[in-house]
Image (cartoon, rainbow, N blue to C red; front, side, top):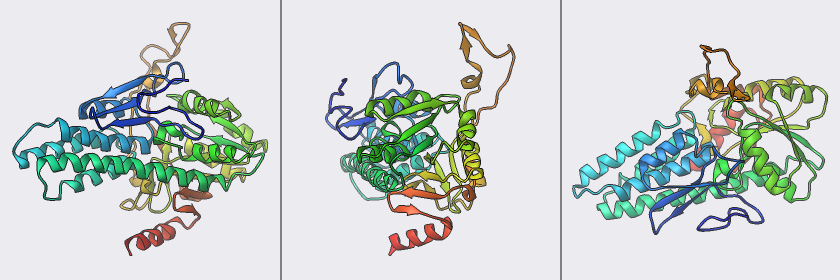
Length: 363
């Protein structure tokens, strides 16, 4: 089993997707584009490299993106060599702004960057800023890890022995740094001795399900079958599925969920067939500023992700064909049975629950 420089990638419980090296001031990440063919690490030594890794999906998954971005700011803090405090802070703020543009849909990115920006509001020396920004990034990482463990425990309580679960995209340790969200719940249930079977949506066009989720499940020994996205309705209609689980990249105040494209169709079909649908995510994914899903920005990715498909070395689409490639879609809250967060299982009406939770956290 391959190992990183700092710790085992696998132990008895978790998989970790990135690691900060406080001695060398660098961030080591797994290149998720190469899974499952190769387990390869990339060392990111500056903020530009972190932004590139996020935008090109070397690092992917909303919580992991947020943690990586926090470390990106920490890298900027150490790499910027200025003696003027105001000029130094301006450079850090520019780095935060640049990172914010790397993936527009995932709210965890902005959540982490906002926290890093608040450090600059303190009156510190340049050396103190460097230390505090690094410590804040580590804190974001640790809190994310603790949240995902709690999410996994809460989600496992909903899973029964013998369940067959459809899962969309990837929500494991590679997407969240450790444990995962929806996949973390399945992993926890399996560790508890529950016999489960996972139907893994391929998740086109980048195949995060077929490549990454299937690989993670394989490492843990959890039984699964890969299915095409379009066949999920078949299994749901035949009564072969007990639950649908997926993550979230951004959640509106009313409960609408933006997740990997294809989630809406899956949730709609599950709802029609009276199969419970659970969106599993850290509560920080809730964007209190957005009243509903229509306000969530949807990332449009390169059409080549769809068009550059080959069979026997030849393109499968006609020459000159064009494509539209939204990375996410929005699932209306009416289709979702409950959220699973570190704060517990949250049932409709979601907006009422959000306001209650946020008011309690302020008091």
